[in-house]
Length: 176
Image (cartoon, rainbow, N blue to C red; front, side):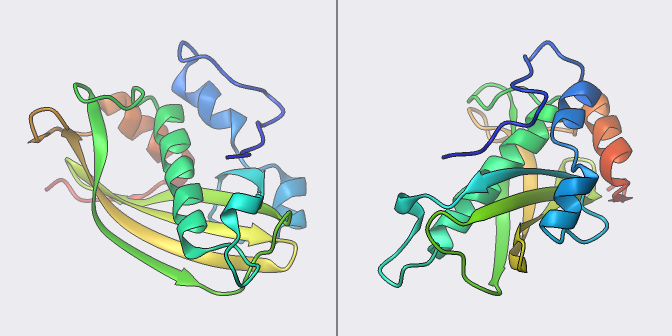
């Protein structure tokens, strides 16, 4: 995928979560250009590539889902969750709901956003959106559970990750 790096570049895994989140924090110029609504603080620019486009000459629904997956992975890694592997905590999707509002075409510039709306002990709700200069093109909501994939064991959201998410999005929290 052609996810354009933020001006800060590719930050190493050794960077603090707040530094990694800052790299993809939405700049005022991007918010204005892509008409990103208030409440979205994390995102990145990308180009609609040829492989994203279907026979109707617009970005296929699966392309949006892949962009949202990329946003989820970038967001969670920036918040301090280790890179995905079978033996480390990672998100497992329980539900996914997408809404497509208007098409994007080949080589359009899009801005993909992600946020955490709410957190519980081991699960959280993430929202995603794809924007352009014409406004919002698609939204998506996913319920995710943090698990060790190798054992299917649910694990609590680590305190540092929880703190980084709180600092960025101030999600609703339920201790269950």
